[in-house]
Length: 177
Image 1 (cartoon, one colour):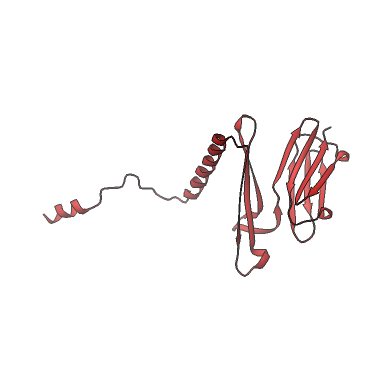
Image 2 (cartoon, rainbow, N blue to C red; image 1 turned 90 degrees about the vertical axis):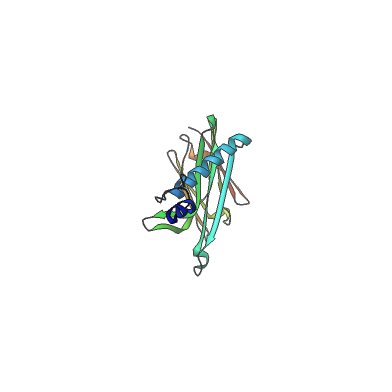
């Protein structure tokens, strides 16, 4: 009778139990990403941006991590993901870099290419642009540093560069070859 009582009081086996192989975060993140893309499609949104920030105590401004990503749907609803921030992967795990990667969007507008970059906290004079073939390099000098190389949708004429910088937003227009 004692064993029968134990059997009745014992919990039935949980058939939904999971084993954590260290990939749970990856699958959870992938699931959340797919939910985000699905939500974009349902609402008819073309772009979504998510950002975050954290601080490491005792490191001051050098211990400030900024990260984020932008998801844009293009032709056929195919999502394009672009990351930004100053968090980099290294052999020792994530590290906070001195140089941030800005959020950059590139638009192919027929006769010209338009690039829009978010560079808050810098002046127009601190922005450096270099174009070689179909690669545009963007960097800043000064206290807040940004750097990014972007592959353009085709060759452009560097001499046709028109730039506008207002309220932390840089817009570049280049004629195609």
